[in-house]
Length: 88
View 1 (cartoon, one colour):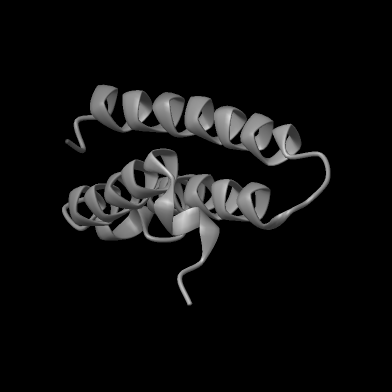
View 2 (cartoon, helix red, strand yellow; view 1 turned 180 degrees about the vertical axis):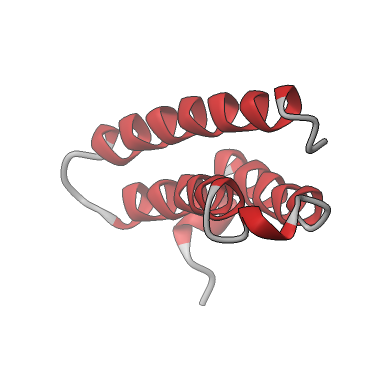
């Protein structure tokens, strides 16, 4: 049985984004493994996770989407910082 979140375009796109983020962060300096690399990857993973949680929840469906929006802004900031540092 297919899970409801797998039908959502937001989930599909955020999964693709997470995969792209993992690929992009492979080239980051090794000293960033437990710093910015980890933070960026965590933010990227939490976005589709929150979308899935919202799709599964029968109550307060907007709350996980709100968290996803916050994580997306966090990811955007972290990626800009990585770019300014010359990591990508």
